[in-house]
Length: 100
Length: 359
Image 1 (tube, rainbow over the protein chains, first blue to last red):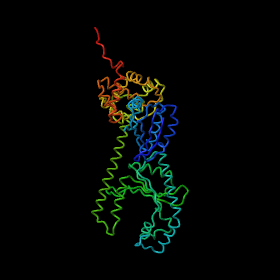
Image 2: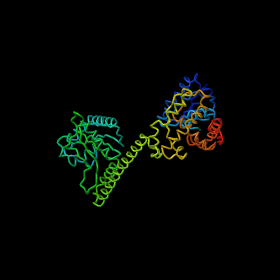
Image 3: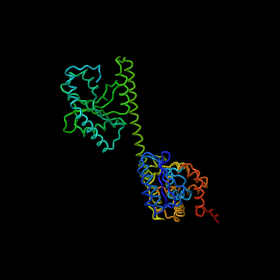
Image 4: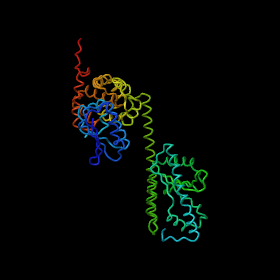
């Protein structure tokens, strides 16, 4: 699992690559901490190369949404594969994000 | 200071006293503001604005030039520190006043209710209290008025006091007419708020008493219905599949969907839940049992209820796509989701053709 944080065109972009499962979730959560601290930039989670997301991965996404919501900011998800979108859909979380 | 203002020696003496007391006055202004803000917050009263100021030298000089002889010492000027509260509604002015009475000592001899005009007169509407901090000696002025009263007085002050020419009576009359009109509007806003509050109470009562067929489906009534946790039972049943945690999310986005299904009352929604719950559970089971998802949103039950309703009413892939478009926003990938959902639902009992009854 590889996690990269970049600033692109005034947005804070988290690029997730590989499998986001329980084994790596703690490490990924820590690497994504700048997203919680971000105040004025839009947050984008780039899932183009994300191949799997577990419940613990979903919890990370939900915590990001929660902290962004407190700042009245949406969370954008980019390039998520249909099977992963289906996971979010099954759990009823799809409409918490803006898909681009 | 304004160069045009000329103070006599007594006025200059008062001004010197003011300058000497300035730090103390600034502290008083902030302390009084903090006390009042905290008290309002504790009582759950939200106001449009609350502000404090210490009188400017220029403003004080103007006052002393006109009526300086009236004041023996600077302490006789009661508005050196001012706090202003702008409320949304007229009745809130009285609520704020009641709180101010508890927080501050009021000098009733100097306080004026400027809302009390002669029967046939309209003009400046504001409640002014002259206050002291509990146990304090320095007085300050607290002005309380509504947003519309504030607009009137601000514009009247801007137009009325600018320039050297006195405003003729016909223009004064226009100000009075506007004050009368704003008083009417203030009353109408208060009346409207009371009507809406009564309506909400009535809906809450009907929902609680279970007379759901008497309650039209609307954003207000649906919000009250949600408070009764009508989807809780099904959510817990679905969550038990994977021993999942239920994560709270807003359910209001589903209201347009329920309306589009032709549900007109909360009774219709209740029947929609009862009639589709078993099939929604089967649908959720078929999707979730093959995953290890142990966190679900509180909208899961409602989501599967809607999916089942669409499929039972021959909505097919197009209906599911429309459902996802409403919930997730229009997106091409909703087509894929609709296709996947339809595929997963195909084997479920409610999707099978009904057998002809034999006689």
